[in-house]
Amino acid sequence: MRDRGESGLVAHLPEDEWHRVQDTGIPVRFEPRAVLLRQGDATQHVHVVLAGCVKVVRSESDGSRALLTLRSAGDVVGDLAAVDLEPRSATVTALTTTITRLLTGPQFRRFLTRPAFAAGFAAYTVSRLRTSDAQRVALAVLPVRERLVRALIHLDRESRHSDGRPGIRLSQVELAELVGVSRNAVVAELTALRDAGIVATGRRVVTVVDPSALSVWPQGVRPALGRAGRDLGRL
Figure (cartoon, helix red, strand yellow):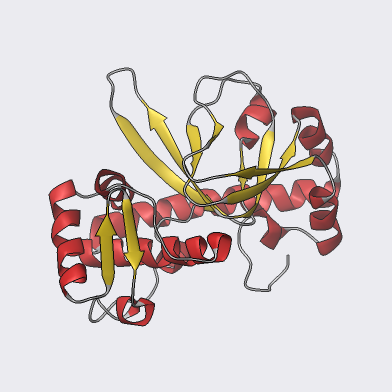
């Protein structure tokens, strides 16, 4: 396993295996709000995220929906359908300018026959499950302010990295879904942050004006709860 401050699948693969992945398939660029994968589709291709941030949203038959997770550089989306050949279980949409490597289902499954890749992918899959568990704990025990700040820090970092400029393209409802609170609670916290000059808000966008102030905004932030403490929204 590599230890270079990376996360996602890339953190679990030998360097030569990661380069082999990057050399397979075709490069694709998505602008914010572009759909990478759509729930219910019978496609099998996989996106390996090289830059940017995407959201994973599941819709239910009653019209409700849930923002399940965010994925960033080094992560993989669409792998479940490539493995079990079932329809897509969620819709994946770009939050920032996103660059991926698109692998067909057969290409991805061939990687799974390679021992080094298969071992790394298994470890990556386990890490996603552990992070999901840690996130549920965080949502249960952390105050709203800490949850929101952690999400904003992560989203701001990914936005600056992919676009070279700030700007978190999530609505207040989507932020509320992400951190597991009501929209009113998010509005109240964003208002306080805006009044303090730390963020600016617009239609479906939050801009972090002062990242250093945001990082210390929730006084007495507790130590990280597993990987979820490092990135609340990163799964």
